[in-house]
Length: 217
Image (tube, rainbow, N blue to C red; front, side, top):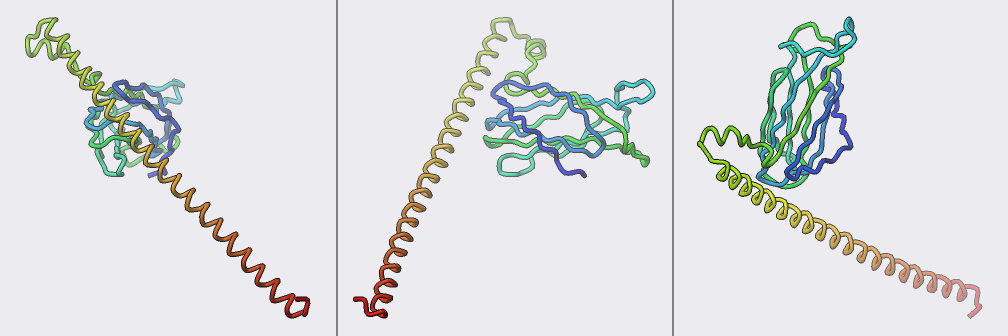
């Protein structure tokens, strides 16, 4: 497997998603770092395409092209590691707040690999309330328009609460980092001062010994 190509794109996934178009080669891994609150459902809808040199454009990938999805949480624990077909969706739920790494790569299951072949991934990420199919809920539970709107508002309030908790967690982490940095700077300043004092005392002692040896004092 090729080394991950870490994209410098940090997405705010506070109830929103992102649509991506990626061009890759087989076994080339693309990774995203995304900040996600804990307890958030994430759904990735995707489709893959294989470049056709004869037609000079991308065509829907055949069934022997598979997408591999790997998701790691901020503690570097695996949340998802699974193989999917050329088109479909994957789902995971965050267990802790912070930066999650999502990596994708395509691979052929045939013996003859297309090393020079180009592939494309269309990815649409959905989070929070955007993962809910309200039309399906309404049809399944026979909800009225009012009940459906109330359900939407309840989920929106829960999402806002999660976002507030996540922002408080980020502020607390930032405060701890700042305090730790300030403490290290303080101790480094004290150490520098002690070194300067010790160097000055040593120089004075050395000069005193030198003058005594020369009988200047």
